[in-house]
Length: 236
Image (cartoon, rainbow, N blue to C red; front, top):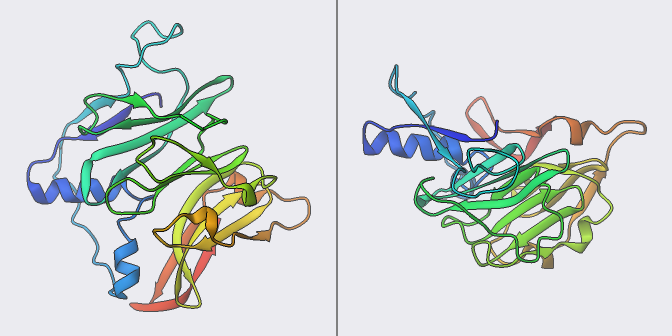
């Protein structure tokens, strides 16, 4: 879809649920893993809750008559501690917007692409709780911003991995890690709030003749029978 839709919350509690739903690629479950507490299942939204379009619609181009951004919106993430901060992006053949950001829950959007040499966005992940530290997946590998999208740095270790398609947080040996599905295989890096470009990125290569980690979304299971696992079970 070329726009994001939201369900209007009926209470502050519902707003927190919406934030968690938007943050599936973000940091909402990071704190759960760090405390070791088994996360409780959120309550479902109220029945018949209406949905409204939140854009991006204020960024004009020469392709769509409604003034919307070219390309297809793909990943959407929101800051766990500030649901007004939303990042999205995507691509559609030659049309790619790069990363788009809203700080007012989707009422207005801006492009935040300084240093982002590849604007074909396939995945996004918010590392911190406030939306300042974000990584973006592209066909050229992973990019990282530490200043809320003000500037991006290419993580050189991911060069040559192909499309970085999806991010998930999990663990290896009890330590928090970030997983990324790519053409070359399943990448992983220790999940810290300091620059990830300084950490050691590792790649578990896909089987010969397969690019499954690129074509399928990475899924993570951290619990078995209500018990936290020391290492995540990863599927795709």
